[in-house]
Structure formats: structure tokens, C-alpha cells
Image 1 (cartoon, rainbow, N blue to C red):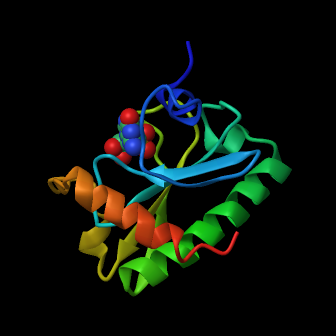
Image 2: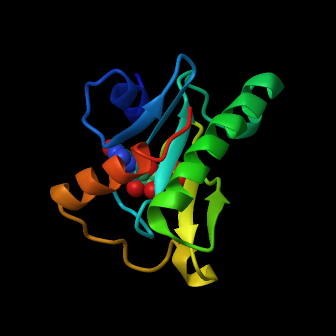
Length: 132
Ligand code: 5GP
């Protein structure tokens, strides 16, 4: 069965999309730990990030770098933190999280509750800073 992220890529499940190309896809995490929290994924469905072909993993990081630069412009933060866990969704993904302190990247704290309008505005402001 297709992963939930493959279903998002295929448009079967809605998301707040940031960008995509032929190999990669970026969208807002639906349960953000901080405002602007994005997920960057390969379209190829592989559970474990470090099982990806090395060249694909390198290209995924380059794609993530572009998203991170746009995200930093949009969110005016000290830096974009990067985390890989993959314990919930078995489809390799990188979390990009705007942060001003370590607390901003704490997955144990309650997630932000944002409205549809807030998610939409956030996605638009990241997208307008993108240089793909
Ligand atoms: P992990 O697998 O790295 O532990 O966490 C998976 C992440 O995917 C979580 O932060 C969760 O909020 C996010 N996520 C799970 N399902 C969906 C979904 O349907 N849409 C979006 N946008 N994010 C999701």
C-alpha cells in the first residue's frame, strides 16, 4: 500500500505544497513544532533515508537546501534546523524547522494549532522566496 506521503504526492490527500520537481516534493508538516515546519521527501518511496541511493540522497539535500533558504527568508529565524526521524511515516523525509533556540525543535512540546488560512499564508510566503 502506498505511503501517506506517496498519496500526498499523487494529490489523493491534500497538503500545503511548497515545491516539487521530478524527484522531490516539499510541503508543510500538518503538526508543526514551529511555524513553517516543512517536510522534504523523495518521490521514490523508500522507508529509511539512509537506504536511498547516495546520489539521490545528495540531490535530496540540495533540494532541501533551496527550501531551507526560502523558509529562512519567510520566517525570519536564526537558522533552519534539520531532523530525520521517520518513526511515524515509513517514507524517507527530512524535517526543516525554523528555530531561534533549541526549544523550537522540541518534538515533545505540544504542536502548534494553525488555521487553514495560516497554513495557506505560510506556504505562500515560503513559495514566494523560492529560487528553484
Ligand atoms: P516522523 O515519521 O519523522 O516521526 O514524523 C512524520 C511527520 O509527518 C510528523 O511530523 C507528522 O506531523 C507529519 N505528517 C503525518 N501525516 C501527515 C499528513 O497527512 N500530512 C502532513 N502534511 N504531514 C503529516
